[in-house]
Amino acid sequence: MTVDGTRGGQGDGAARAKAWGLALAVFSSVCFGASGPFGKALISAGLTPLQAVWLRIAGAALVLVPLVLVLRGATGLRTLRPHLRPVILYGVTGVAGCQAFYFVAASRLPVGIAILLEFTGPLLVLAWIRLVRRTPVHRTAALGITVAMIGLAMVVQVWAGLRLDALGLLAGLGAAACQAAYFLLVERLTGGVDPLVTTAAGAIVAAVALTAIAAPWTLPWEVLPAQVPVGDHAAPGWLLAAWVIVVSTVLAYLTGAAAVQRLSAEVAGAICYTEAVAATLIAWAALGERLTPVQLVGGAVVLTGAFIAQRAVSARDLAATPATLDTPGALGMPGTRADSADSTDSAGDSAASAAADVPDETAEGPHAHAFNR
Image 1 (cartoon, rainbow, N blue to C red):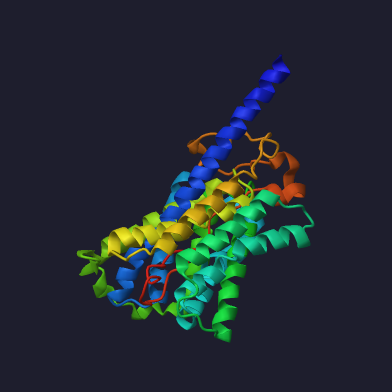
Image 2: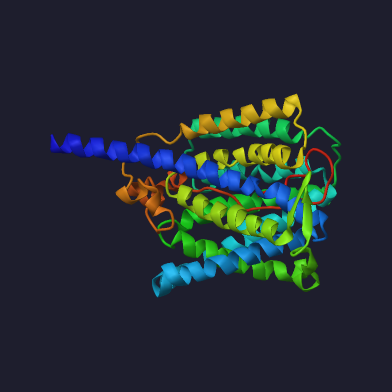
């Protein structure tokens, strides 16, 4: 009876961990997508896209570093030291690299195409897990990502103004590779480095890496105290910047890191497609950007793909879920992945989520809101 009771408790814990993981992954995607209208407003007010990105990342670092010092102190820093190389790679590729490549792609291709190219990252994750790690991937996760890709193509309307530019195409694929690196590196760091420390360190590395190309010393600081138009309304530039920094970067990354501990890489990769839907809906509400019937149907298809993929987190995968992952109290704590009983030998079923956040160019038209990941 004791054994049965223990198994029942583990099953309940697994279900709670999965539910929290899905909720946190969706919340993270919505936070990322919510950057669109406000980032676009700052760009329209005079910031260059890369300056807006640098402000976002540097501001997040200024918020996260004091949090690490207060909440983690020397203990958090000690968890970082043995993993400096992957953490630096995480900041350079998963944060800075993905954004920089996306900007090049968005400046040379229609923004919808650039988004679609970037979001092939989860497919690269599946390919890495299957071909490099030689670990089987969940068929439902692969199906879910495929369905979500189809829906995303409808949301961003890839057929609108399609043209081929070799450099833009390479940059878009570079953004996808960096997004895949983000998932895989966060997966590797889970359980070894405190997620709060990882996020702060990644922001510092990304801000430093972007400084040379963003030229923040030329940033028009007068935009921040000024009233900036947002659709039919206006708000202080500093308030818009604060939203992008705190909600769409700090909260987005921290909740994404928490979701990493509860979901597999395949599932997290599919759930992140909800970001494109969130960005489209928020831009519609804040900026009045119209949604076509095809975009609405595409959004439903994306959500269907995410639902299919989340079923890949089976009770077998989560049977060993630790109690510390059952509640939101574990949000910023280092911990074991939901399937950690198999350790890194079953890395294909371990956790990864959220995404490298990528702002948009000042493109016009139905995709100009895409200042998200």
